[in-house]
Image (spheres, one colour):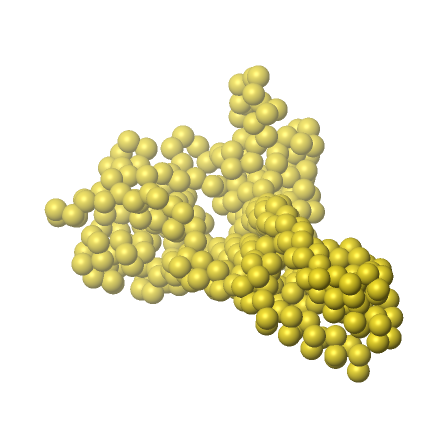
Length: 404
């Protein structure tokens, strides 16, 4: 019952000095809102990155030559990845390597009538779309016959189709491109649709991404220094990538670290780690304002003790114990901090929602973070309210009653 009475007294004191109470809580409000908004934005960014990687293909992996080991000598033919090496990898990891092709690409200007544009041509193997979440809206993807016969075939996206031909379905039309110094007329065999992603927004190139048989891009021979893989998602990508790279080194009689790997999963983990570290670091800096807010609470509570010295004397003369007086002022400081925490939380959620809304990203609010923020603000209030409360509790009742 005494607890509720102290809470009532605290709320009455806060109401009597609204502006002073608000200014006292301002440090807490700013600190909590900063921490909540920063951590929410960080969590939202991590979720977006994870979603983009998953849509692109979490099991995408590249195995490539360790350039540091050949920096001081010419690259030998035996260093290159040969078609038989690819087949050996597929035979050694039949359940883990679902797609394998040399990673090779080229760019070319093209023109249809008066319409000009630039194409980014990525060399792929058959059934590429099955592993990379592509929707073939019209026609088909590059197949094995295109690959084996080095046929002049190309798959473009709907935007490129509308740009060059003013229609969505342009299957059967041709595009003149330059490959390895030779002009070739590529027949469109498929048109794909793809949702806009964060990676597309970051790409400032004005090229249209297209897909052609990788054999068309191989100028001299069938060797490559970069191998693109799509692997078994049930396996640990770090362990699998290491096994594949080491096996390739062994069958080519090279040192164990002669070939390296890089996977989308590892890249995503690195980005999320960086984002998480930045959020924690910036949030910690923002939390410094909580200390400033706590000092503000201590300052105003000391003023409150001075103002209410006579009241404290009356309460003590009527039988109030030292711990009762101390509890009263502690509760008041904690309520000030808690109200500031609640207001700061609401402000932080609002800032994060507006910021992510402008960026077109769903906001993620961690309920645990909200509880921690409000709880921490109350702890700050208790910590910085302890000294004023002790000072009030130790007042001599006779001296307090004489105070004017």
